[in-house]
Length: 549
Ligand SMILES: [Zn+2]
Image (cartoon, rainbow, N blue to C red; front, side, top):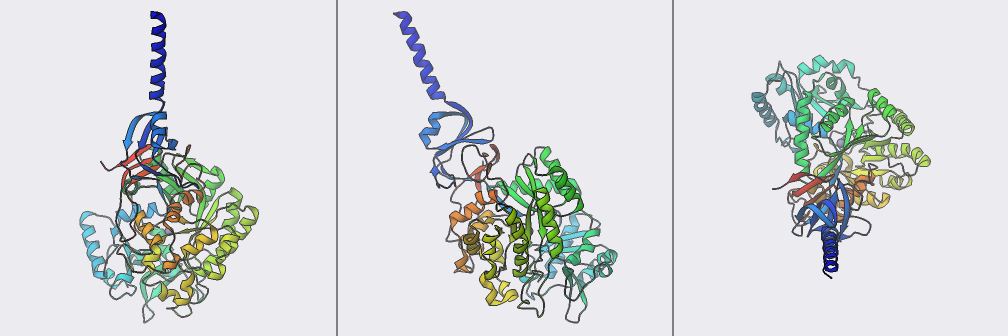
């Protein structure tokens, strides 16, 4: 009898322990509102993570009973979302911006000069590079000339980039050594894809737009590699603190791929980077040799092509002339034949093509080029970046040719001050038309284009959903009829961004088997007024990359 009792006790203890212990996982986050963002739109209480993957999402009791974890996190009923992806941004430009004179927000030319002088006190570079001026916020609103720069900096090369990166102001010392006036030949129809900005008397101002910048860019020195890498780590910190865990980097040189890989191999850089290569002989060789390339969190299988310029500097390619500049249509930065050639190469190596197109004419050119690809592969996912001004008559080609729109909602609420000056009232119907693009194609990828705009994903949400800027302007929303819903906005920053980068199997929703890439946040948006917001804890592949405490 004693013997039997002993066996029974052991059995009960075993049964209880297996019941309490459950399957072991690394982390359980519970008492949460886990927004799965799946088709079912489920909101669950708890999530179990192991080895960088999601093991299960489910009701509180189910997850707590079924699993035992090394770490439990009580989320205090806060929201959990898949990590946000910025589907169009420039990590490398932002890293260099951090090393340059920061001219963002300068209210005048004089303020710009003062910031350069302040910068000089802490650096002894043999050149000055500044980034971020925007004449549209200066009192006079006119493009600058380099007279003052020449006077103050006669012996030091100075290059100051406009906020959109499509124009630069240089001093004469730099201009002379670049030989830009003999190397870049302006033609009447601007088929060269760039121009020199002239003053009222027809004299050169020292401002160069798009391809006219090239001879200067060729001789511009770069910052030391280790400094750029240090800046990238700072950017990573800034992003994960807001719940951004991935970036679609819109244009990498071969050197920048190497620089990024060094950082990734040192296990310091965890952001998921979908890198778009810039067309160059080295990058073509890379694509041919490596095909779809993955190294840990870096994934490369696409090219970024500049179709036209920007609207602010009148480089966007329009069907009819600019409303505020007679006979000027803008231009293609990469001519049509070259774009066709790049598209052929992309098809050959199985790469995606992502083309910057701002003006209605540029959009139409690219939509037509992509048609061929659609006929061969309806699921090609080739993208138009920006799709900023689209002729309403061409809108249906996004659906017809399977073209993925990739847009940046904060551009709408930044450009609203002058966009109508450039294109006139009639063309505004197809401008910043995110809702129409979404309804046409069925999906939309959302980004910020930082450092052109700031990195804040909550700014993207506010601009997309209520069409207001961070100062809550305009009161009724800018072209509010083109607002998209909050749910759609979230998808544009998660699952649709994942689909736009062929990563939907790993990213974009919170489901079993996907990467444990997510963040805990409280009320990710407030419709009434803009609020900065931050993550409590951010995970990338199960690794805690940010914690508020
Ligand atoms: Zn961009």
